[in-house]
Image (tube, rainbow, N blue to C red):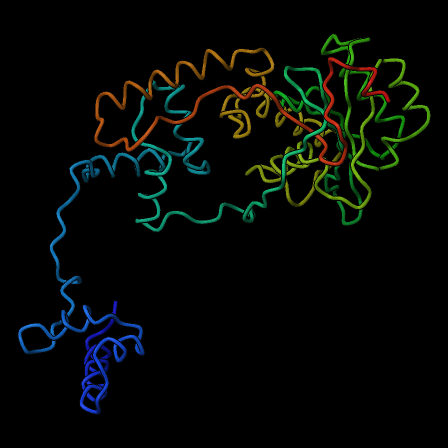
Length: 357
């Protein structure tokens, strides 16, 4: 949009050029304008102001009313939803109250209009990485990912060590423990407990880790061989080859009740992690699996839940079709999850001999 003074200056330059013998079209082109624009500006013998800022724009027929917009704000202001993004709020309303108020984008639009879209806590903008493509999981207990992270202790420089195993298909935490030290023996303890808890003894399984020494010891590898587990490792000096475990640790350490000043004892750390694992598996709607809980997906209950959500969306669109410009939200279950971008060709757990090779 060109301001009035700039428009006046451009007309004066064009008129001066024409007075000196220039034709209208080349004179306008020199200023990046068309002859038609000049003619519109000088119509009726005078310079015409841009009328767009003064135009009356009717309110769209499908616009939210003030009451509906306030309803969205009231929902977002609930104490239970205060720290949740719109993605989580919308699915919780569908699951817990059988209500559909508006789409996720509408929630964001309303919150942005009221200056309520702000970074939460210590979170930074997410960085998106390419999906791993080698090991494919089409069901639970086919491909696990594990890693170790530090938990702050009572004094500076003292840490506890959380070893955690995640099923990449369901995102369920299938095994964990907090130790005083990082070691191969401790890692072995966690994997043995997880295999027994999930009842997958001697079942073909891929277990992915980074290149840390607690996950590569000779006795640990021998134990994995005895359990019919195929070890998988990140590429050297590549920080994003184990994204599922890293994402779970990030969720853990960005919980509102995470003690950023450290745990007073290893017992306190274990108690807190126990509560976190229960919340993560049974209450947290995970964005990577269509916002169902990991426990629901691990038990293969996600299809029924997503089918119900789809039906509610269809009913909402039928009740107010003017507010839907296209299809309803995609509630199709994610059938395949992949891991490891560096190895080719792709292999699945249906071919354990090729994996071992």
